[in-house]
Amino acid sequence: MVVLDPESVKYLASAFAIGVSALATAWAQATIGASAMGVIAEKPEESSKLLIYLALPETLVIFGFVVGLMVLILK
Image 1 (tube, rainbow, N blue to C red):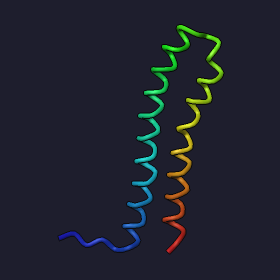
Image 2 (cartoon, rainbow, N blue to C red):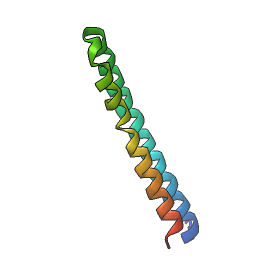
Image 3 (cartoon, helix red, strand yellow):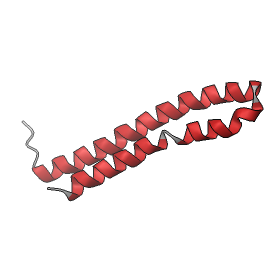
Image 4 (spheres, rainbow, N blue to C red):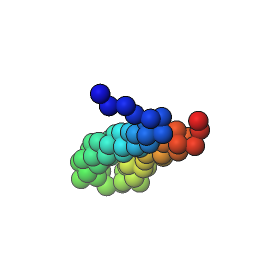
């Protein structure tokens, strides 16, 4: 049986929060990027809007980082 002390659980939870949010962002950006390339091939004038769509999933990593820091800082 593995016994984990509360300090190590905090580190695991923080790593999990950041890791899952980073994977979700990568998946979202891959999907949006593939679709954006198809749209740019047909309508190049839409490229400025698509750059904004590519930047939106980055907020997931920022939120995951904030949650990870909160887990480490708060008791």
